[in-house]
Image (cartoon, rainbow, N blue to C red; front, side):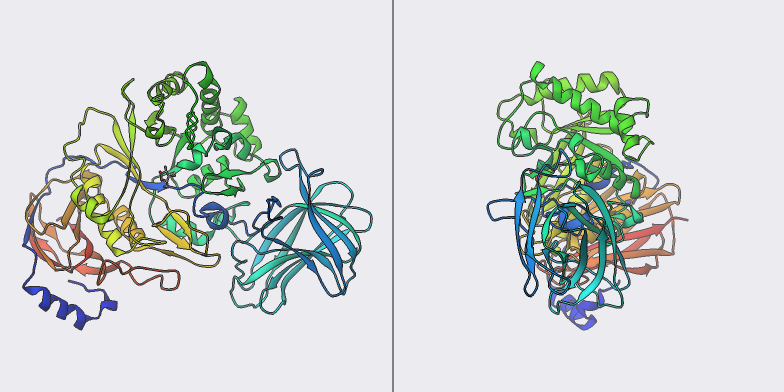
Amino acid sequence: MHVRTHIGVNAFLASLLLAGSALAQNAVLTIHADQSTAKVSPTLYGLMTEEINYSYDGGLYAEMVRNRTFRADWSGVPYWYLVEKGNAEAAMSEDKTTGPSQALPASMKLDVQKADAADPAGVLNVGWWGFALRPNTTYKGSLYAKADSGIDSIAVSLVANQTGAALASAKVTGVSGDWKQYTYTLKTGAIAPSSANHLVLTVDHPGTLWLNLVSLFPPTYHNRANGNRIDLMEKLAAMHPQFLRFPGGNYLEGDTIAERFEWQKTLGPLVDRPTHPSPWRYQSSDGMGLLEFLEWCEDLHMNPVLAVYAGYSLRGEHVNPGADLEQYVQSALDEIEYVTDGTDTKWGAVRAQDGHPAPFHLTYVEVGNEDWFDKSGSYGDRYAQFYKAIKAKYPDLQLIATAPITTMKPDVLDDHYYKRATEFFHDVHHYDKADRSGPKIFVGEWATREGSPTPNFGSALGDAAWMTGMERNSDLIVMASYAPLFVNVDPGGMQWESDLIGYDAMRSYGSPSYYAQVMFASNLGDEITPADQQGGGSRFFYSVSRDTRNNRLYVKLVNGDSTPQSVDIKIDGAHLAGGGKLVTLSAKDTQATNTIDQPRNIVPVETALVASGTELHHQMPPYSIQILVLNER
Ligand code: AHR
């Protein structure tokens, strides 16, 4: 038995003694190691995200400039401020008459009356709650600009908020009267890592300067241009995700039809992307476009689960099935062509032009999102119309329905569960008796929602219990994804409480629920192994799977109680060979959690497990999630 060191051995022993009288009823788990109920779905665990909680902008998508397209609102141009050093005099305003592209028809206009080398004028950007700068690091930038004859260069600097010191600087030269893109590189020296910095763009001459699409990227995962944050991608990789469901969620639907995720407008050079409102109350830069989602899949070896807009938006607008829906069906067909087809097709050629000639493999397409909200009752017919058209061209695709329907049997049904831990404890057998002749199940969103901004240990217990149920039924449940995945923990960053991974500009951390996911997905066999449980407390849960290639058993145990739980494990039909291991995630109470400042309060602890023969007496600590990895002889 291993005990997490931070609890303290004495405290733990005391808790055992105190709890001794209240010890939960002994559980006996008889594992039929020579039998298999079914195959474990090889795609069981995956990811679901959308533009919520600053998941991409201000999150995974590594762009450092906030409101890089100078979008104005009633308050002016948010996140940009005028800079007038010393005697400099200037004014900034939105200019709706000129922009670098059709998609970005407006710009930021800087009118400089007075400026020189000693007293420059310009604008500054505050970033996504700062600019995270690290020592000796190169940041790659670009901007679109044009100027009248007075101005031909722009100085770009990363500046420390407290001291005003320039930490990295560059000069963009040759600025002319026509819109053009310029690139620059900012390299830090031996600075202390900090995100208390901002970006400054200045000129040293009177005149007029127009700016748009000011961008800056740190090093990204796999060095992708327009890529993702390294720390967050590494956290996702540790979850061994088999798929990514994108682009939403509510983000797919938009508040209105006009605000849906229009995939065509998220392709190609950033200057050709108009940006659009996320239903989570902020504008999406669309830097994370359709191809970026697919490349993210490529980077983490995930299968894309492509959700296509199906004619329903959040505020209740819907498109009638039949002729009205045809354009949306065609759009979905085009989108699938972009993802999967050769460069000899219209949209395959566009993908090649966007830099990715190789098609992506696609198995699942989801038709809409949470269409049970559509009170018009149109979803059954809308799904059927998409189904017929998509299957006619792509017969091998599996089409996911987002609500139960009576018009036909869908291939897969997407079920969503947001619950309290006790509700999940009670619902662990939800799928045990489910109809195996109905559609396969995709648990496309689920989470125990206790703890904010990220879930606490009580949530991790609810999650783990629920996952044992999903694993035991993974002949039916083909995929499952926790949601939401991300939250920016800075003030104003969160729209939805209890999100798996938290971060600010510089740091990130996994919640206890995150570590439960990592543990479950990293220790999964390919067959569901039947087991019988006798006794055990009401908050004791299990699942067993077997890796047939390595003759290894994965026994997952959850003790959601405040008292220890003893478990007698009996192996039927095999002998253990020793050399196993025990992975434990536990906490002193359900409120215990990880935070941005204390990111590793609760992390899995691995110890050796001496287990041979056919019996093993095991004692689980209070509030614990454990995985026993047992080798068979
Ligand atoms: O995950 C947050 C939201 O919950 C999703 O956007 C939506 O599908 C669900 O209602």
